[in-house]
Every structure is written in C-alpha cells, then in structure tokens.
Amino acid sequence: MSVKVQALTKVYGEQKAINQLNFSIEEGQIVGLLGPNGAGKSTTMKILTCFLPQSSGKAWVHGLDTETDSLAIRRIIGYLPESNPLYLDMYVKEYLGYVAGFYQLAAVDKQIARMIEITGLGLEQHKKIGQLSKGYRQRVGLAQAMIHDPKVLILDEPTSGLDPNQLVDIRSLIQEIGKSKTIILSTHIMQEVEAMCQRVIIINRGELVADDAVKKLQQRVQGESVVEVEFNNVINEAALRKMTNISLVAKIGENSYEVRATGKDDLRKILFDFAVAQGLSVLNMNKKENSLEEVFRKLTTAKKK
Amino acid sequence: MLTIFRREIFSFLSSLIAYIVIVVFLLVTGLFMWVFPDYSLLEYGYATLDQLFIIGPWIFMFLIPAITMRFFSEEKRAGTIELLFTKPVTDLQIIGGKYLAGFALVLFSILPTLLYFLSVYLLADPVGNVDTGGIIGSYIGLLLLGATFVAIGLFASSLTENQIVAFILGLFLCFFFYTAFDSLRLLNLPNKTLLLLEQLGMSAHFDSLSKGVLDTRDMLYFGSLIALFLMLTKTVLEARKW
Image 1 (cartoon, chains in turn green, orange):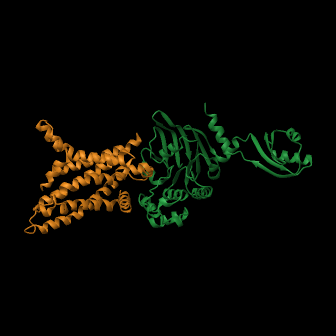
Image 2: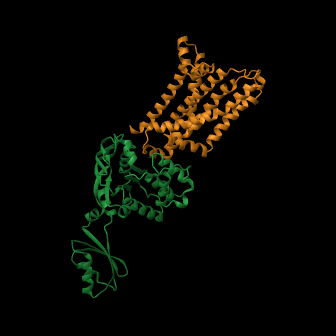
Image 3: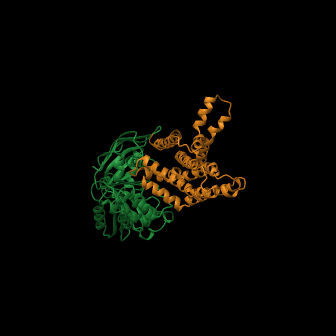
C-alpha cells in the first residue's frame, strides 16, 4: 500500500478542516483528490507531506508514519504545493541543483538534464525562474518535485491557471510520469480527473463522500442516459415521445434532438428502431457520457443540510 | 545544511546584497578611521584601532538585520517555506544553514579590515608598537558581536512575513542587547542590580574582550545568547505545528 490514511482529522481552531478521513492508495495509481474549494484537499496533502501534523488519526506513506518517520517520508515523496512557490531569483538549472542537494543524489547533473528533458524545459533552462511564464514555472515546479525520483508524487492543483495548450501538455506529462509512480493530485476541475486519473476520491467539507474508480463513479448516476441524435428529415416529435422509456425530447438544432431516457435498454437502439419505423435515416448519433461533474454535484450537494 | 548555506550565499552574491554590505561596512569604517578629521587616526596621534571597534558594532547593528531580514520572511511570503519544510532536512539544519550564511558575510566584511591593522602596525613609531593583544581581543569581540546580531536578526525574521518589520525588530533587539542594558546604569538603582544589568548587555562583554583578555565568561555570554536566539527561532518555526 503506497498511501494509507486512517480516521485522519485536522482541526484549525474551532473548524474541522478534515474529519475522519479514510482511504488507501495502491502503488502506481493516479488518484484525483476532488472537492470544492475549502474541502480539505490541501490540508490532507500537507499532512501527507509532513508539513502539518494531524490533530488525530494516522497517515502512512509506504508504511512510514507521518508523525514518527517524517524525514524518511520527505525523502521518498515529491511535492508541488498549491501556488507553486519558487525562488524567482534563481536560474532554472541552479534551482534544480539546489533542490537536488537535499537528496544526496549520485549523478546530479545527469538527473537535472533528465528532468529538463522530461518536463520540456530545454529552451528555458538558462533563464531565471522569474522570467518564465506560468506554464513553464509549473514545469519547474514539477521538475523539482521529481528530481529525486520519488516513490509518491503529491501535486496540489498542478494545472490551475494554465492556458489550454499548457493544460494538455502538463496533463500528458503527469500521465506519462504516472505510469511508474503513485500520484495524488488535487483539483476542483472534473474534466481533469476524467482525463488523468484512474481513481477519484471526493471530499466535501472535510468528509469523504466518494472513493471509487472513475468509470464506476460515472456509472453510478447512469439511471438516465442522454443521446444527441440528428435525422435527415423532419420528425414527428410526438411519436418519438411515445417510444418506451423516453422521458424528454428537446430540439437542439434543425432536425437534431437531445433525447433522455430512463431504463436499462440502450437508448440508441430505441432511436434507431424509431428511425427505421418512420422511414428516416440517422445522420449522427452521440451518446453523452454522464460527466463526473454531475456525479460531483450530486454527491457534494446531497450532503449539505 | 550545506545546501541551504550555499543557496543563501548564492542569493547574497546574485542580489548584490553581499557586495553592498561589505562595501558599506568598509567605506564607513574607512571614513571614520582615515578621513573624518574628528576621528581620523592620522590626526589622533595614537596607533590604535579603537575607531574601528567603536563604530563597527553600530554599523553592524544596521547592516546585519538588513542581511537577515529576508531569511525567513521572504520564504514565508513567497510560500517557499512549505517546500523547504517538506524536504528531508530538520528545522535545525535549515536554521543552521541560514545562520552560517549570515555569519560568513559578517566574517568577510571584517576580514579586509585586517589591512587597517597592518597599516597601523606599519605606521606606528617604532614599527609594530601597537597593542596587538588588545586588537586581537577586539577582533574576537567584534566577530562574536556580529555572530550574535545574526542570531537576533534570524529570530526577528522568523516572526513575520514582512521584511521591513523583521528589519526594524532586528535592529531594535540588537540595539537593546548591545547598549540598552548598559545605559540603564544611569538609573538610580542598587549597585548589585546595576552590575547585573551591565552584565546582561553586550557592550560590557565586548569592552572586556577589547582589553585583550579572552575571558571564558564573555565567550560563554555570547555563545549562550546565540544559542538562545537560535532556539527561539526553532520554537517559532515549530509553532506551525501547534
């Protein structure tokens, strides 16, 4: 077990930032820690990285206790804090060399060169960090987190504030790294989890509300299915509405409709049968996945009282 | 610890802080020693380095808090402290690295003044007719004083994320420990209390070392003051865990 958390609780003054959190993460998984702002994602990460101690409960990283083996844990984790703090007055290579200095690495220069290559910093490696754009700073942040080849990577909102191109780059970078490491990343963007993670842990107001594989979680709310369909000709909406299970038909364009249905039968088949019966052709049909966003909203609002 | 020491030294060099500190220290002491007619050694008629050791602590009082003010404040403000504390180093190693970097800078600003000593030594008539013992004692005193100021400045910096606050606080604490206890002598207090007060201040111990007597009590005084402020710094840093 790579990371294990048991009844973890953190209290700031009166407020419980996280409350009785339990989860465990296997080696080599990319896990998304999801939750609205202030849910306790960063706090959980700060405890796992031994920056803050928990109020009660236990947390282990690779079998090491965060309370007693702090230094040993810090040696095997890589951490990218939320706002990606960096020394802006240092040069990229100089900074990576500085971070490497904490870990007694054998071939420092080689490792720095490797990190620069992996994170695509090649062209920027001779610049001062202060001169870099946000996306490149994020890469420097990732490079420093990975320089010692950590067993567990903890990334707090690694993609916040990036432009769409950088977003895609950083995501694929994280996925690439995730093939060989355990990664915990936090975010409040659902697509990100869908794009990168195998598993998602959703917390809301410090409490665990879901912990499941991304696929399974999507299926959870699949009582209803949604299909976008385009026919070649005008259809009889009333007739469509009368088909089995169909609950809602909405026109979204000329001859195209969004159709919702309940029940277990595949809606696409029903629509196709309908088209055949009516003598129409289906030009386009698109099943909409129930996005995690919906799952998320359902789970995090249901809990509110 | 070495990693942090190196990074701080690099930062001094790349931000010009090191050059400015050394140049200002030498310029001011140089002016007082050789140029200003009221103080100049050339007018004074005695082959001593007294000017350096009188003015030195006062310059350090301003310069050292200026060096140390960014040590922790800047890390706190920028958030890099979170990275630092999640690296495999203990709090004491972090403090030690930063402290030694500050001390190194003090050492390197004092070193060139050995040239003053050489000049005085050669100017004396007959050559070499100077109180070498007293001067060595004063150098050790100045070094210990600087070392203590660095510890005080480091502590002030750990208290706040605002560098200006750290500077002013450091300056005040340095001033207080250097001279305030001494100035309290003017109060009308019982002799025993006065003696105690005087012993609490740095200037009494500095003066005692300046006489060329390397009294272990004085060394111990500076040593414990340094240890005290470094421990206080550690306590402040650990406060995040409370």
